[in-house]
Amino acid sequence: MTQSSQLSCALGRIDKANLADPNLEQVTGEPLPKEYAYSQHMTRWLFQLEPEPSERMQIACRAQHIERWKMPRKEFPEGRKSYYEWRQACGRFHGKRAAEIMTECGYPEEERLRVETILTKRELSRDPDTQLLEDVACMVFLERYFAEFYEQNADYDREKWLRIVRRTWGKMSDRGHEAALALAGSMPDHLQVLLGEALEPAAE
Image (tube, helix red, strand yellow):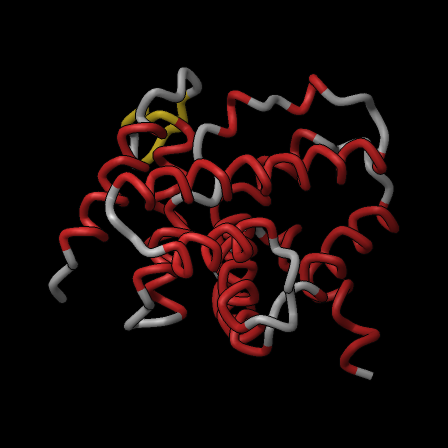
């Protein structure tokens, strides 16, 4: 598949921005800047869920966490309300950065605004592009970060874990559900049990 010069420009600039992340993630034994690694996971899952994605979806997925280290969670107060405020602020920041890069690469205003809307997730469940981004993000979380997140929050009680899994499931489309169930078999046993338990009410 050939990429337009605009797309190559945008993806290259997003990668350059994310390669500056001082935090690292191990990927197949190699330390990579965390948000650069995350952007590659997002791109890989995008093509698994949508074999021929639009240019705007490729940009949105690559920019999902662009320069997120510049807006750390610790700058917001503790608590669930502040957590969601942080998430919304991150979405606006990522959307603005993606739009700036798209401007530099010659994209028209209509496409820039679409990507900005997708990244802020204002139209989740109503807009197919926004829903696809959410499916991709959920798949990356389940594959790459769920096990680590579970270990880091081992003090959560069972009901809280069930709520977390059900909220994640509720944000996904049927296509995302199908991919998640296919992935479940490769998860650690305790996470497979948690997933099965969380989805039992929906199956009744």
